[in-house]
View 1 (cartoon, rainbow, N blue to C red):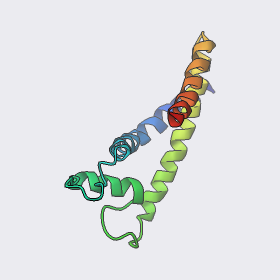
View 2: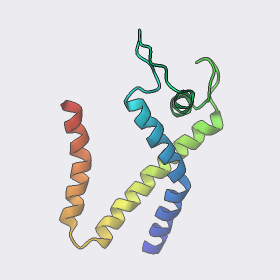
View 3: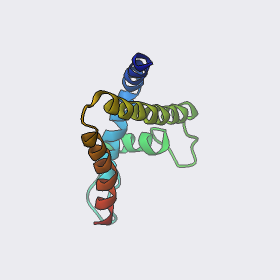
View 4: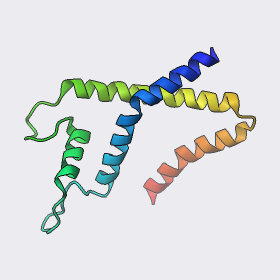
Length: 122
């Protein structure tokens, strides 16, 4: 059973890692609004940044908002989201299974929950 869980974690992670890296990178650019120039600004984002933002937000590369999204890409994003959640849960399970100090695992999980909430409130 544990061998199956480790294999599932391994393959889910490797299948979806490229997409997760892309989404993390393009999301980081969007966090600082590098894809969307402020009004009355001389700043113009690079085309590649705007393209990444379009794929990240709208599952297309360009065109008006009324243009249809890429349905296959949308489904792949949904499947990747599900795969990430499953892989993360399997990783947490393995952290408890292989760690001799469960206190550190609990502390890590707590930090992963509390810190974003704390930073949101600041």
